[in-house]
Length: 128
Image (cartoon, rainbow, N blue to C red; front, side, top):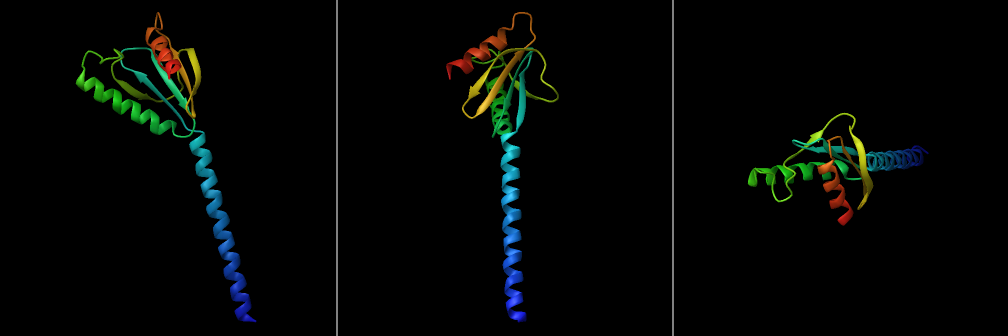
């Protein structure tokens, strides 16, 4: 009788552990699907907000790439946009464009006088 109870208890414990693991995976997937990240361009009032699975990693890679370009081309590089940086807080500026970029949703904002950088970034997204 004890032996049978012991195997039932182990089976029940394994089921509980499996359920906890499944919940943990689902919570992690939900958190990644709701990732938000915003980066801006030095010397401009433009920013790009990304939302979705992998947004934070994409922002980090974009900023690192832009900083490497800035180091190689101090005048702003081939795109002329200069270096990028991660923004914190609520994105500011008028929405210039938004859409899907792969699995991510992007929103470009700019509060500059002519929105030159924001329009250039929108053109780049639209060409992808």
